[in-house]
Length: 360
Image (cartoon, rainbow, N blue to C red):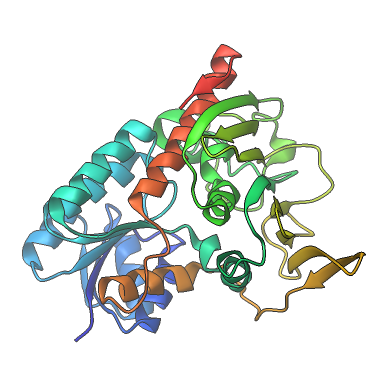
C-alpha cells in the first residue's frame, strides 16, 4: 500500500491535491471539513471512503494515516499543521505557510520535534517551465543570479468583499500573502538567500470598489471585514548582495494579468511568464520560458519549449510531497525557506506601516 493520506478541507484546491497524490500512488483514506456536507460531496466525487467533520476525530479513528493535506483559510494553517505534526504525521499545506513569521517558526519547531516532513504547495516550482529553468541554473548556464523581479498583478482580481480573503485576521494580508508564488519562485531560483533589508509599500485604492471584483473567490459578506491591501510593491536586499523587486496586486490599473519572474544572471538572464486575457480564468493563457545570452557578439534569446500544464504545477507539487516521503524525490521546498519568505512578507508590511526600511 502507498502513503495513507487524510485531507483537511474540501475547498477548490482539494481536486489538485487528490490528483497529485493519486499520480504518486498514495491512498487517500479520509477527508475532514467543518462543513460535513462539503466533505461528503468531495468524498463522493473522488471516491474517498471516510468523511469527518472534526480533524481530531479523523486522526484518532484512523491512527495509521501517514500524512495530511491542509486546504483551509490561512488562519488555520499553523494550528492544524502543528496538531498533525504533533500526532506524528507528515504535512502538505496550502499557501501561504502561515499568517506571519512567528507562526511559521512554531511550525518549523514542531516539524523538527516530530521528525516529519512539512511542505507547502508552492506549486509554481513544479511547473514544467520551472523545472527547465532550474536545470539551467544548476548546470551553470545562468551563473549567479544578481537580481530578479517577481510579479503577479491583476487588474480586476479582488476575491470577494467581506469574506476571509479580505480579512487581515483570517488571511494575514491581501494579495502580497495570497499571490506570493512569484516571490517564492524568484527566491527559489536565487538559491533562497537570507534577506537583509526590505523596503515596501502597500496600496488600498480599489479594495472596496466592486468594479475591481475578480471572477473567482468567495461570495461577498456585507458584515465581513475588508481591511487588507489591494497592491504591494517592495525591494529586498540579501546578505549575499543579491536583490529582488516585487509587485503583487489584486486590483491595479495594468493592461492584463501577468505572472512572471525575470532575472539577470552573471552568464544569462531569463524569464518565466504566464499571461492571461481575463484575470485568472482565461483558458487561452500563454506560458513562456526564455533565456537571454550573448554569443559571438550577438544578443540571443532562446525560447525553452516545455509541455503544457494547465494547473500550474499543482498536481505535480502534491505528487512530489508523496515521492519525498518515500525517498524517491528531493522535496521541492523546505520549511526553512517558508520561514524566510514569511520574514520578507512581514517586513514589507512593517515597512509600509513605518515608511522605513526594515532589517530582517
